[in-house]
View (cartoon, one colour):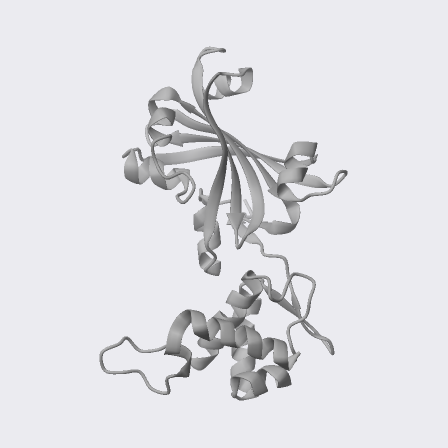
Length: 267
């Protein structure tokens, strides 16, 4: 187990250069992070790269101490960072269990996928499955206040974090917005960010309905979800600041990869 950590550490050091090996910051560089932060970054990169897959255990604290050449206090601080990011769970007498990567969505905020994953330091991207002009189906037409059969832009994407497929997004846009989106960097940028930063449209709010549904065969295949299991289906209608509907979506997300939180007042 210690050898595995040493191999992971060596790969990460090669990736980040000599940063991990310097004993003091130079006068021409910004202050280096604390040692525990460097170790937590190293372990996080290893987890996200699949060196420690979900369901496995990290090496023991003693093995980590030996591999990184630090005290138990430093190792525990590093592990606390991973625990706070919901990447590991401590099991008494067994060690630290690696969890499935989870996006934590605050239902009191309207966020894109990249914004959800940013606190974990996880790189995200999209695979565009299709991007077409289609006749508006009934639900999309009603949501976007257009006639049924009127042309809309439909975009289907797989949302990916740390090489894991997390959700399938099916989005409809009015032509005035959708055709401009088709010319932009859909694989690497959230659509909300493109709408606001590239199209200059201020997003106001969204109406959201969430339902747990049996996974459809094509969705299950793309998300690696077994037939008979469920996904969370989110219907989201987003409006601009003036109250005009601009984005109607169905999001199919893996239940094991998402947490939802909301603050609810007593009255």
